[in-house]
Image 1 (cartoon, helix red, strand yellow):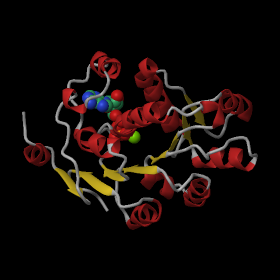
Image 2: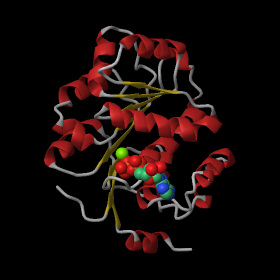
Image 3: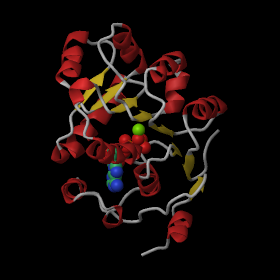
Length: 237
Ligand code: ADP
Ligand code: MG
């Protein structure tokens, strides 16, 4: 059972920010409800990945976070599980709009995120839908109307639906920018900024990225408040 500092050294975790909580080196240390722990064990996972171990306690405290870790490091559950806990605490009416909003660069990635949300959120009775371009809007609009806790969206399609006034983001209090570097590379910055204007400023904002170039630093500085930054390994700028 490693101390927090030893765990960080062993897994090349570096953190910056005020009062950073210690990582959870095991699933038992997370305090997640048993139905959720059964889901991760039956998925065959034996321990949190380093980005999960360090970002979970930060996100659970309601802090803004920037997490920089390469592809395949388990970032999705890094933000989804604290999102589930956030939903449990808030108990909002999903018919009034989503509480958790995840922005993702592509349809493929958005669908993968939704699949993880459905798989791991099932036992907590969490609902999730996915909004992306290149598909008819009708079924997506119907899902929104029926009411969902989590919306995973590509910035282009979400912006279209916002302009049609068919979704309200006034209940969003947990906002995730996943693959922020790729979203900016794909030219989504104007859409992201428009979307964020519709989200209340009283919210938790989490940014997950594989690289940390200056464009990403700039948008992080604009959208996050007093964040804690977590890096795993050497980061590419
Ligand atoms: P990233 O977003 O960093 O590229 P993903 O969240 O897509 O990574 O996760 C990569 C793979 O690792 C997925 O198949 C996911 O189910 C799996 N995974 C997530 N957490 C763990 C864990 N704690 N232990 C083992 N595998 C995990
Ligand atoms: Mg990812």
